[in-house]
Image 1 (cartoon, rainbow, N blue to C red):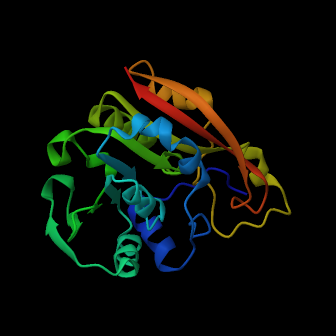
Image 2 (image 1 turned 90 degrees about the vertical axis):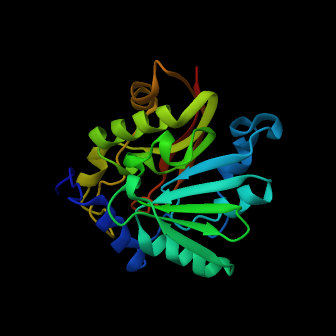
Length: 236
């Protein structure tokens, strides 16, 4: 089995995953790591907005809104964003955002509490929507091959204010598991790509500090128990 599968076009790949209903990673409830560590992401509740990277149709966004934050989501999976807006049941308006890439758009909910960028997070810059004090990356960056993960980390560091925090959750597994004959894969793997503490430090240090705050086990990957690690990343 080829253990080094990489989509040629990540945007097309993930959009097709949502379109075809292959969303085993999607949760109908808020992710427990966000509940457990929200106070670390937004200490004292002092921040007014949060960026959610590769947000898909995550329920975490509504949970964050309920805590008084304006949520800015970004994803290149158009079907995921449209599904979220349809299920939301409120009015949305869209406008082009050329700086984010070809066909990129910004969708804003009429109450202003959620903004969704359709575009590539690798093109995000402070000029597009300013800087952030809080960024939430739940199983996002680990879906990119290492060169693009490095680019994404650089983008996040540029748009994060000093003292700002990232709550990041990433899978960690041995690629040798993909060689097992009884492995029941619903789609070629990776993505996701394994990412451990050393990998995360290489991506974000020395500009940021990296702290492992939780390890939890999920069975969504290959239907086997797999470690996921949650990190708190703070910009110096």
